[in-house]
Picture (cartoon, rainbow, N blue to C red):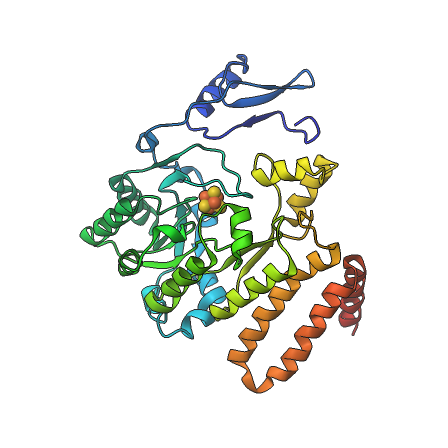
Length: 392
Ligand code: SF4
């Protein structure tokens, strides 16, 4: 706070202490007795005692949507289609999703729960336990947004949507009973908490996408991440979701666990091949404060300058920033481009089989440039190419 020019921060939930703060602040009353707040005072940070978590989430009113420009908060389903349309159309089981969203325009993010049952190595968890809204609250929230803002769809952006399978089935039943004409995406779910029955209920009631966070195709790495699932389960449920039930199921990978090696990367590439994947969200592990990975990086003294590091993370999060593995730096950096190349080649094998050999040469050339030429030289090369292309 001293260096970032920030006067005050709230830790965790702010629903009840924010009004107290605003009242104190407007009346120039002291801030030192508001729980859950840290503030800068005479050049030093004062951290007040922790705020209590809200035990009943249903006591929180719906967000004051009328105070914001809703157009800025709504996502366009056309944007979603332009990213994933080809994958979905080419899949016999998920092609019907296109019909489901026909004529629909926007979706908006809402939360149905807070917290997660796990504590993965890289995950920042600022609330304890899991609390969720009642099904009735969620249905009223959906109806309110439909009626007032003509919202067509929803993204449930919980950390863990399906911690309680019985609740998920109750929600599906309520959507059917109320005959809600909606589509929805699930932002965070655990693989070990779904089965075919749940997935079919979700699809029947409007679900078009479910995000699990597979993270890796290697059991060694999954253990390091404390995910509590195996690579086999990852594969089984991802295939069930996408190829059997026909929901869009993005693959999300985090590479660079302390035990990651070129062999575990090969296992992840094999996993992607088994899934016949052409896309994946691919990020390097970034230790963030208050996560187990941060503690690991501190113990190993891998982050000598916290401020500079956090600045870099803000700019380039997801890129290779700090090497937690024992691998050589160049090898570590090559893993991302290698996985990316394999995905591109699989996509081209499907869409342009006749020209596959050309793409094979092209993507191997890109991979060689990415891994053999240092990043700052690549940036200079890119600038030169751009300036040449801009000339008449
Ligand atoms: S990564 Fe997902 S499963 Fe793991 S702690 Fe975070 S929210 Fe929970």
